[in-house]
Structures are given as structure tokens and as C-alpha cells.
Image 1 (cartoon, rainbow, N blue to C red):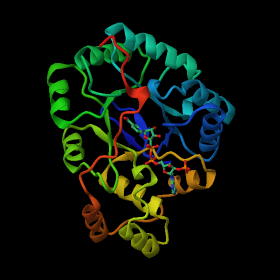
Image 2: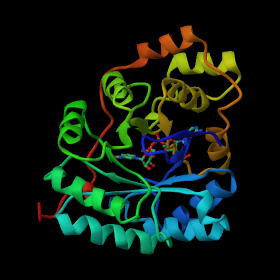
Image 3: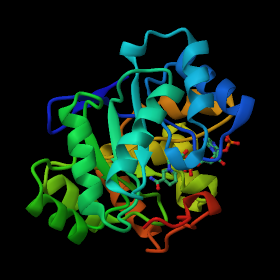
Amino acid sequence: MEYLTLNNGTRMPLVGFGTFMLGGEACTNAVAAAIRGGYRMIDTAEAYGNEKEVGEGIRQSGIDRRELFLVTKVNFKSYEHAEQTVLQSLADLQTDYLDLLLLHWPFANYYAAWRGLEKLYADGKVRAIGVSNFEPDQLLDLIAYHKIVPAVDQIESNPCFQQPQAVAFCQKEGIVPEAWGPLGKGKDLGEPLLLELAAKYEKTPAQIVLRWHLQRGLTVIPKSVHPERQRQNLDVWDFTLEEADMEKMCTLDTGKSKRGYPAEFRFDGGM
Ligand code: NDP
């Protein structure tokens, strides 16, 4: 596994394992298999409702907790809610610290939410704090009025929705841009250009896409329940896309998000 260093000195793996829409035994098995297969970063969220299963997968993997980089996300409901939720996440994940805690969406009073995250960081419950789905202007605002600059902004980025301006803004501010839905939820993988590049580099379309993200300076958290795909998605270190091919990838950008707001993302009041 390769690592980068966040703006507070914490080391973070470049490739992690996503767990959105995973639940029950399938989630536990997928997480355990991913860790046994070499993943060291696991991405979950309070909103996914699967932290217990993720925690169980981590336990079953048998890997020392200190070798892992655990990421979860919290949504704002009240200042107190952030702390209570994170304590529950720690219990469910069977750990006493998180490596990275993200504010999931820039909804409601994200100033208060960020202060809650800053406190958890000061208390040593989390090794780094960051945000998710923040646009550059929201990031600018957050940075201007708070002590801690987010370490990461986890944003949607994939071949058909690349978000070059958001990526460039993060990089200018020393914030690591991380791609969620890096494979376009699997829907982008049949693009003719990806098939052409896959043939040229003797890799799969998914490997081409993940390598492209890494060369743009993003970290990635692909999700797969299939051990062979999990393996493929980690095996992206032994080739480099030529500059001309990196430029060709820009032609796939439609500027259209694949984002939806599933029920579990909706607030039930208290905003
Ligand atoms: P991805 O872009 O990771 O795509 C996952 C889909 O691609 C699945 O259908 C999977 O199918 C398929 N797939 C995975 N690997 C391959 C491969 N090698 N070849 C072909 N198909 C493949 O989408 P996600 O939405 O899961 O995003 C990744 C992670 O990002 C999430 O799991 C979650 O942790 C995070 N996320 C964060 C959000 C946020 O708001 N911060 C929002 C959404 C996601 P199969 O499982 O059958 O292999």
C-alpha cells in the first residue's frame, strides 16, 4: 500500500475500501476479505447504518487495529449530536479512535458541526478531521472562520463527473481530494475510451480509472463485494498512464453528477 501525508502529519493510504450500500453479513464478509486482501483504509458512515458490521469485519480479519485507517462520517443534527454519534461509531467499530472523521454533508449549521469535530480532534478521539461534499466556496468559508483546515474533502469524482475545479481548489489549500464513487458506481466502465486504454495498458477499465484518479492526486475508495474485483482495484501500482492519455480522459467529463439522496441521507428533523 502507498500512503500520503495529511496536513496534520497523519499518514493515509491512497486506496481504501468503500462500504456504501453494504449491510449485514455481506458487509462483514466483504470488509474482512478486503482487509485480508491488503486494504488498510475502510470508509463507512453513520448514515450507512453498517458500522457494527464493518467493525465485525475488521475483527474477523484478524489484522491489528493500528495497521488500519478507519474513516467514518457524521451529519449535523445538533452540536451535542456529533460527539454522541461518534462515541457510538467508536463502539460499533470496536475501536477507541478514528483515523479520519468527516462531516458528511454541508447541510444545516456546519459551523457548529465543525466545532464539534474540532473538539473530538482536541480530545484525541480522532487523528484527523475533514469534510465531504463541500464545494470550494463552502471550504473557503470554513477555513476562514475556524482553527483547523480540513485534512480531506471527499467528493464525487469519476470519469463522467470529474470536478476539476473542486480538485484544484483542494490541492491549492493543502486539502486532500478523495473520490467517492470513483468508478462512477460501475456505470462508466463501458466507455469506449476506457476499453481502448484497458487494451493498451493490459489492465481492466476499473484499474485505468483508479490509476487516473491517483495520477490526478486524488485518493480513492472503490467498493466491491467480489474478491477478484477487490484485488484488481488494489493492483494499480505497476503502470503509469501517459500524459496524452490523461488528457484524453478529460473528454469523458459530462459535468453531470450521479448523486442521489437515498432515504438514509434524509434528515428526520432537529436541523
Ligand atoms: P464505486 O464507484 O466504488 O462503484 C461501485 C460499483 O462498481 C459496484 O456496483 C461494484 O459492483 C462495481 N465495481 C467495483 N469494482 C469493479 C471492478 N473492478 N470492475 C467492475 N465493476 C466494479 O461506487 P460507490 O458508490 O460504492 O462509491 C465508493 C465509496 O465511496 C462508497 O462505497 C462509500 O464508502 C463512499 N461514498 C461516499 C459518499 C459521500 O457522500 N461521501 C457518497 C457515495 C459513496 P460489485 O460490488 O458487484 O463488484
